[in-house]
Length: 524
Image (tube, rainbow, N blue to C red; front, side, top):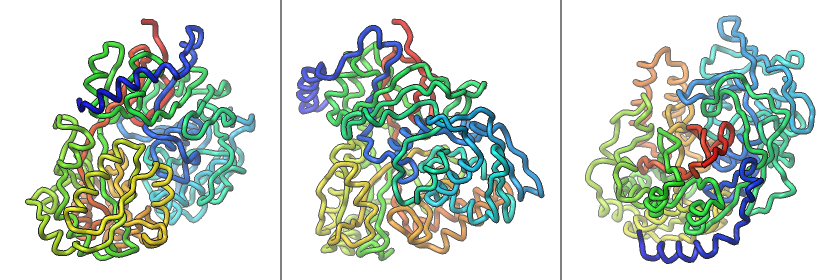
């Protein structure tokens, strides 16, 4: 452990008692949790951040959930029927579903919610392009009339990659998709206590007593969402040492993303369980802005690729233990049947910093990144060092995560508040195939921040969506990866595994996103 971390930990341990302690009477009904970063955006459709997605899972529910085997399962849906050779799909709602304001969940609420989600989601946009009509038939039936069969419909409605297809009241879902909703009213297992929110410090959720779980066992975001805590508090603690002290003393029950150099300390504590909740790991990446110089030029993007050494990024974000990370990662994670070696020599071959300097030296480059999100900050610091060594004129001043999110939505040049590069990471689940990997979308202004445009990539994605079997999908995905190494919508930086720390008194933690149903406190 670094000496500065030890010193900070000592200071954090002294400061930790300032956090309110749970009383003995509260312990069975109250859970305190330290999220990876501050919850700066509440609308789960407006952003792709995981913390907002996890917040969404507290409040809202889905028509379909995704089990631990990555299969879609009915959730709010009672079931569905498929007719007219796959071109008419009817989804029936479970009876008795109620929103937090007491209003029943109706099919028209679901239709409005699907439309708002689809306007922001890459796979949702594909669905709507194939949909001749989406309508409510009475209070319980949602009807899709499709131009052609689309077998991925249920997987799309169940996916955990943000934005998630959360169901909202029609009046809320009527909010334009580029404008934040003002009401956190869902039908999910928790209510959001907006009056207790302290931006930058605390968000609070209460058990929704009228939520009726499914009868099946919970499996990730599918099955019975049984809530055992009356109240869940998210406490934003930017200082890693303070978070470590708080979980060791029992003042918080969980820490979502512990700092890498503090993991050995936490693992030595017999009251804390440190484990990886996502078997697909996280894939780190470096995203280009394709609208402004210098990286609107593919030759500039390819020049930077020659300088990227994935192990440098992985050691920074996950430490020296190679069991915690993998290099040699392409555009699909190792767990995906779509993964291949196509074009990988561009990442695994000898690095050529001199070649990168010959092209990039003197270029002005603005890199944006956070100072309060340790994993993203670690990746960004390595990128900054790499860029300096290529000879660019680097503009890099870390800010808070909320500011980064606002900045990366700016399409203007760097001089007008825009940007050229940012680092981030996504769950391997979100990159498993060309259908869900929204960072691979290359349809210009409609694409995710960075706005790449490649008719070749888009055409192959459409081929993949219509492929008749897994073998055909794999063949097309191999071609997509080869093309991606030419067009470079982004550069993969490697795969790492990010454990979560829980007090052992809390059991029943599910695999997948950070979820708060199924868990309960047990006696020591």
